[in-house]
Image (cartoon, rainbow, N blue to C red):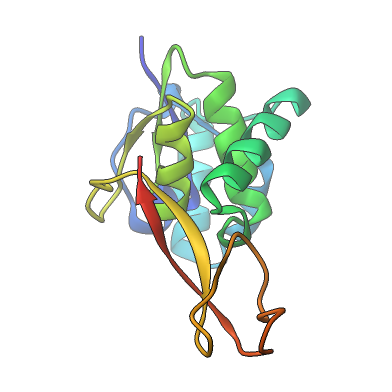
Length: 159
């Protein structure tokens, strides 16, 4: 049996999923601002959807991979929790998300991913920063330590 770990997009967009197979994390519930999304979540919960916090050890694995791919600054706390829950359930779950940074990290962690509305990522990417002034490249930061210009995120390589 395949379970589905749901990002907030599932409830925001009204993605049809069997509620008894649906798992999400508490922070997703807090992200549901519209009454429609909140109602969809409440109906799913009444029909058997579960809200579970991720195991703490999984969060560390997600953070390490996000640092490796350099997606960490793009991920919210909710994204990290969703990834940790999906990693915890990796053998029997699919992660439902439209977030490309979440998909990038998930694929690198070996998590099965299915988009909600958007297209699925085609390539797994590792990012770097490049100075808009002197064009030097760095692994992290917002300001160039050489010339003081802004650093812009760019694709370093495909994995």
